[in-house]
Image (cartoon, rainbow, N blue to C red):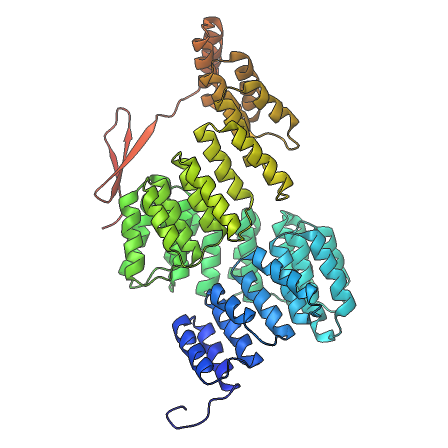
Length: 580
């Protein structure tokens, strides 16, 4: 068109930008952005909105925000596109900031903007704000054609927030129910582990002659995978086979992923092997299934087969393999995967960058982790958390605290994972006072409700410092029931500081939770032995013998020339080849 001398106007550029966003061609989109600036088209609101959308779809949120901030005039589409882009890239805090800014400027949201906002509140599981948004929808929605779409989004929001009763009320109030509305309600029941209700509603939908589409079935299967609904997942699999659904790669991938997440690795592999058409997502699903089952050698074996099938791995595949390397401490393999990803041109988004930082840190190369962190073009909370946790793991508490200060200075709001990493750092460095200040700051300054992991960190911190009574009092004052991690931290501290009395309390609680676990009995026996209470040692060992405990042998692993070699006492080394 340009070669023919035809004029490119403000209607042409948005169309080409939309094409760029659909195929994720960020570089070409940037070139068109340059063309728009050079020709004075960037001031047009349609062009600017298309640029925000293109950058958002390509994951270039810094560029999207720059376009948004520099717009001389914004319409409601500008605001809803910016919110939707942040939402899609899971930058929820930034999305909420735009929502607040929109309210400050008294911009009345469109129906599309309200759907985006309700979807955002669903993903952050903020039911109170979601209810306010529901009221806003009732007051402002005028387009009857969007009533079903909005109701479906509200059903999804309430279900994701765990308020299934409100979701059902919205569903029951619908005069006309589309297959999408039925799907949202059924998926909501599955998400809330109400499998019987989900199955009943599915049959009711069929009785009303509303038949599921492939998308409907697939979304239900995906939900079954998330919550471990294996039986319902099998029922849906059988329904597909009985009713002659087209077994697309997307459907097969959803089933492989569901079986993998439900620990049915044999079913996942059988389904995978029988699929005629496999794309990169299918391969990633089966690799993830083996990774979840702790079969690292099988996962890497499949990766080698995937390479041989001429398919380039996706960012999801790389993240899965890097996580395996992090767990196994296989630094050389992790470096090889990193180099392979660069060579194959796998786009390094924030998730992949976080996985790389995490892998290098967990494999002992903390300087390599920081080098990647400092070179990252854009950092989200996951990047900061991975780096802080890495420093904490290596006992470099000062660097972790400095990163926390830097993060606050850059306006990145910490989340609950941030404080888990920092409290662990304090525990490893023995900084009791600093840990207490952090715990207090998390609650009062940032309004975060402590989870079981935070209490576990605090008990570990106090226990390592010898403050066993204080640690025990914290457990007793917890508003949630302590789990094995919390009591295990107290038991380990009791052994360290030779305190059999508190050790007995912790061991009793642990054995009540996990009566078949021999580890707590062995630890308690060692505590009694350190305190010269030999009669108690004999009693514990006698009880273990009576119920025929079988102690699993310890296992060590080391990476040699791209292979992870496992060693068990008295055995020859078992080798797992990682890459060729």
